[in-house]
Image (cartoon, rainbow, N blue to C red; front, side, top):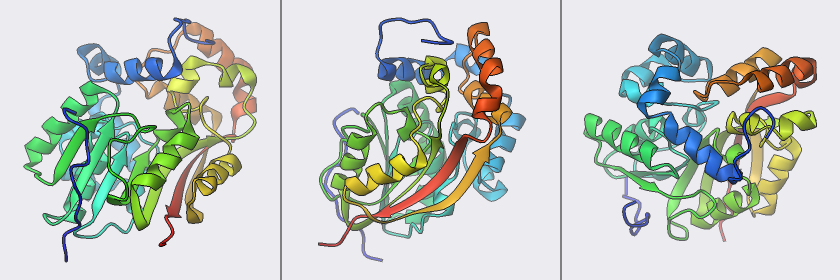
Length: 293
């Protein structure tokens, strides 16, 4: 397989239910996910067995989980396994938007082989450090991690074959810019496969909750608007390859899975609107393709 060519892709070096701080949503999200890899975050997150069972539930199998460092599984906060649908092959260049501790990057690196390359972009330096350590423990030399924002992807135009992302784009306040950037960096004929959260008709108190935003719920678009935004960015052949709808208690568990202690104020909101969010939040796997010009 001919090796995919690319130049250097990364930059150098790389309210309700939560106290208001005057910070932007992005700053709060960054702080919360950075804290998950500190000692404090370690003490709050689920134990290893529980986390492993969760990753299996969202689509990872034993062979995949057993072949990567435990840390990559422990610090995985996705809502699906995009690679279970993506036909990534040897020699491809794969970009993971919001790569976290690297679970999907590590799995993709095995598929692309030595002639390919996988790039993980994450805005939190703590996650980048963790991901690099996980890659080094595997001896993977076809991986590059760099710190950056998915609204301004630090990659060159038309430089990657595949884009994957796992429960991250919903956290962005500017999803239109994310998909526009994804379109820019994909080669003509390149493909995107993302697992993400969508939500329909959530109560305003849930949608305005910073706790629910950090937990991948409040920032979620409706499925129709999500797909429309992808289409407006220039993609074609857009389809939903899989969908799982959450019951209310599962939605709360997803928010708790962020490793943040849920305050009584949010528990009160959840109790008040439990019936209103039941069946309104879903994880979808979306495929899209950049046209060949």
